[in-house]
Image (cartoon, rainbow, N blue to C red; front, side, top):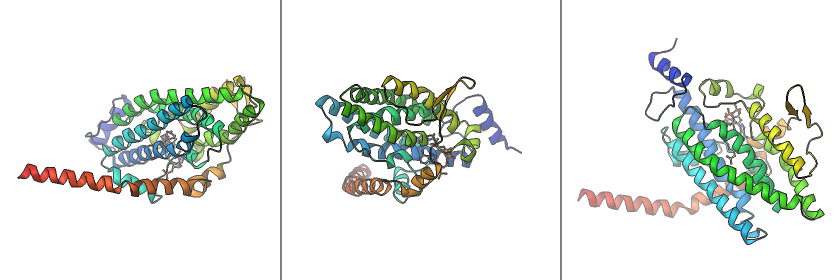
Amino acid sequence: EMSDEERTFQDKIDADIKIEPKDWMPEDYRRTLIRQIGQHAHSEVVGQLPEGNWITRAPTLERKAILLAKVQDEAGHGLYLYSAAETLGVSRDELVEMLLSGKMKYSSIFNYPTLNWADIGAVGWLVDGAAIINQVALQRTSYGPYSRAMIRICKEESFHARQGYHAIMAMAFGTPEQKKMAQDAVNRLWFPALMMFGPSDKDSVHSEQSMAWKIKIKTNDELRQQFVDQTVPQILYLGLDLPDPNIQWNEERGHYDFSDPDWSEFFNVIKGNGPCNTDRLAARGKAWDDGQWVRDGLLAHSRKKAAARMA
Ligand code: ACO
């Protein structure tokens, strides 16, 4: 039996009325949002690392300026999302603490290395492309602050995906060596990009409840299919080989068929055993420690101001 509060809450969800920070909400709804928004924020911030790695080695000044802007955008996305999570009663410090202690996850994709410049194009195109598909759906998520953050973020993400596709086009239509690098990047990043949407629906523990609360608007498999359908024609346009021999248009379904990623690899990566997990967390830990003097300074300053106000 639902309480009156729960009934009012579910009625709002069913009527597509946004839930706002001061509204009553079930504790599990709050917890699920903190988990998902927090994980999303961490992904934006950790996601700066594989691309930041190439800022100093971008092939032209123009590419460098574009990549710098994109990586800065990711920091901004992290900040909006931490702020959205904070409206649920968790502090930024607590979220960072949970990331650094391994209690909170960030997207599996950022545990793969960017080996060369073609990977930077492929990351913008495939990884940000996958992120957009997920985030366009989340613009309609039931929690107001999260939904509004997604609207702004999606605008910036579409620039990211285009800059990635532009960079990979230059490679795919370049010299035979460049084309080979583009192909190799697509081959390596394809399955990790598919994994970004999470486990298959039958193994997704949170989907059912999150869909009922409209925290999630589409299931992991629906979004993954949408990504494949959107991306295969783009691969073909580049004149590259498809990274999976089972990709084939299915007339009956009206979708491309494709192979599942290796789910044991996925679960291993999210347990902390991907190629770059240790490096990524070490980099975040160092950044947090290196920033201690700034936080100390801000705190001392605000205490001094408060004391002056009291006097
Ligand atoms: N990477 C790391 N962990 C993942 C991933 C992934 N790609 N996919 C699923 N998981 C984790 C879930 O967090 C959950 O673990 P937890 O209970 O410890 O939190 C577990 O695997 C089971 O998965 P689901 O039950 O399907 O989890 P959920 O309903 O949260 O769906 C999804 C996962 C689709 C990623 C969802 O959380 C989501 O849409 N998040 C917002 C988008 C996001 O985080 N994007 C960042 C990507 S990149 C970028 O933005 C630049």
